[in-house]
Length: 322
Image 1 (spheres, rainbow, N blue to C red):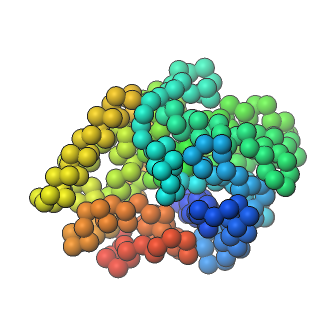
Image 2 (image 1 turned 90 degrees about the vertical axis):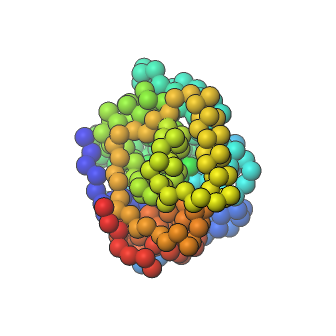
């Protein structure tokens, strides 16, 4: 059983934030941008990690991942990017259907069909330098190591994909030859629930996948707890305005869509962060956006924010409580 480690979580979330470097650009631009971000010593990663595989874009919806190595220990992290501002990427987040998950070692589970397709689409893409796919790269890395330590990490949509890729890695690990054993741990921040209650129970039973939640972030409510979003006043009480009525109706539609696609549940291995309530003058939608960003999560975890994306508004309104 793995134990949640705050310093490791800070590092892994920073790696996930770095996946957004030069977002929307060609991989020829993204790769050096990731390398430059990994070199920065002011982050929780301290310049101690280097890019060793990828980045690659999957065959569907522009999903992306890369692999970083901690220079001193040789630990590896598979890092998945979250939603980007394209129609395909947003469409992937809509809970349209579920498919049996082939990676839960004989246990019948189901996950989002789109998320499963996204993971499978990345597993088959080769790195342009090594010519290796991720399965081949990890197999070779495990075989070369005396003890193989692997993290899987991501934020938002990437955090949902983390749990499926983590399940895949656990299934594959017995085929990796090494003399020192294998450790696989997942750190997923701000994840929507990627699968059904059976998948959530399977993930929780592994005791090595940590879902990190800001209690005022709406995204972890998707899809299993959408009905609780408004009663729980996340990120604040819904305003009694036209905007509030539209948000209420939209939330109900999303809840209906999620139920039509299947049953959803978040794994119980949750880490709930402290929170910072933003003032209502900021507006419900802008609050929701800001509570969800990787920089806001880094702030709530006590880690330095990155230079990627907007700085969090949370520090201006207090320290995390709860």
